[in-house]
Length: 176
Image 1 (tube, rainbow, N blue to C red):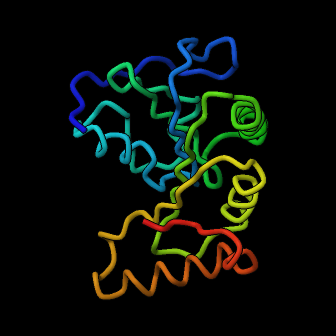
Image 2: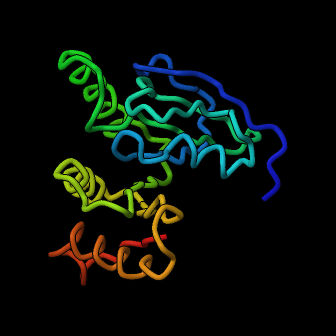
């Protein structure tokens, strides 16, 4: 797919701010600093459309990136480590939950997990939420370039066992 005119459209914290054009939405979820914004930039072959930072917790709103008027990448704030106050974390958690629970335009969830680390309790909660939502999803083991190529297959296998120990044979999680 050749992307010609990707653009940042809006940052939102409530449904009244979401785009109203009913385009399909590909949603990026994962802990802080896992690479959600970098994923957007990589997929559209741009370096700075989605703002990135080495400091976790920079994305604090739901960011909608319009991809050639055909779909949106939706970059959600990460969970876990952040310099946000507890009150800010609660507010962010509420608007993320409201978005994920109510947004009808969601067509795919991409769940990013850092291949270098075991899934956190929050990762496991997110996985269970995604499973219960019934929405299509992909689990993307990110940051594989940070480990030796000979360790990637084992790391992916370990992640799969840890994130999905019970449902491993009932659901076909796709690890990329």
